[in-house]
Amino acid sequence: MPSMMKEERLQRILDVILKAGHAKAGDLAENFGVSEITIRRDLNALAERGFVRRAHGGAIVSTTVAVEPPIIQRMTQEKEYKEAIARTAAAMIKDGESIFIGSGSTVAYVARHLSNHKNLTVVTNALNVSTELATAVAISVVVLGGMMRREELSLIGHIAEQSLQEVTFDKVIIGIPAIDLKASLTNDFLPEVMTDRTILNQAREVILVADHTKCGRVGSAFVAPLNRVNTFITDIYTPPEFLEGVRAQGVKVIVANVTPSSEPA
Image (cartoon, rainbow, N blue to C red; front, side, top):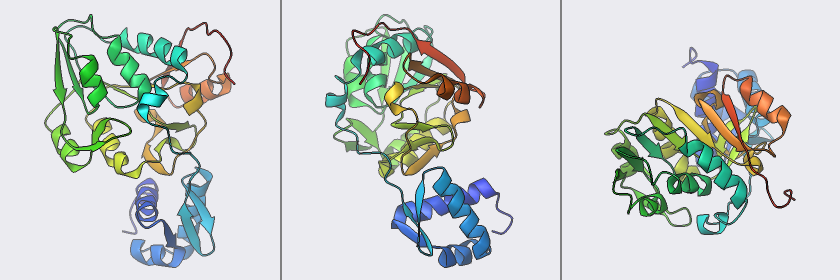
């Protein structure tokens, strides 16, 4: 394991900490076959990205992002921004394509704007997305199996991940609870992380949809690097300097035009 690339080692160290909630530098050094000095540098790097917090002799899981409320409640939050983002994302989908739509409130709005598409195949792990498209006769809907995450109305876990190996898509439309220029794409619900990674591994083109409240936030679990995304669609209240940072990582940025009734608090 000494020849392991640094980023791969960082990810494996993070996986150890996420599973146990904490880890000692000495134990990590022994497990990964590197010096404690190297491990301390790795832990510092993970702490700088917001994934862990340094503790005496090691590190513990970071809890930067608060637990999100259930999706039904989130559907009413920042609604006008999510609607604008969803319209923009739906306009990028062509008739005849096969797409994956993930879980989340903004992504659910995307599904609502696809009903007039023709000869479209939609694969999803979100029960609310399948319901939205149930009456769209020109759209074939494929629902993954898996363990239901009730508050998100999504299907995750081993069965969902196995099902994903059987399908391919032209485009993937996903949301994420936390996006940061250094920490990249993160999530605080650990059982969902591996499902998210599997989805991204199957993707040819990734469209990330997220409003301004998700930007600059960091969750405890790394999902994927920001440059795994091809297009990022957000709203007009995402800070310009954040957008420039996203563009600098090779991601196309689209700002959905919306004229809200009032500025966000």
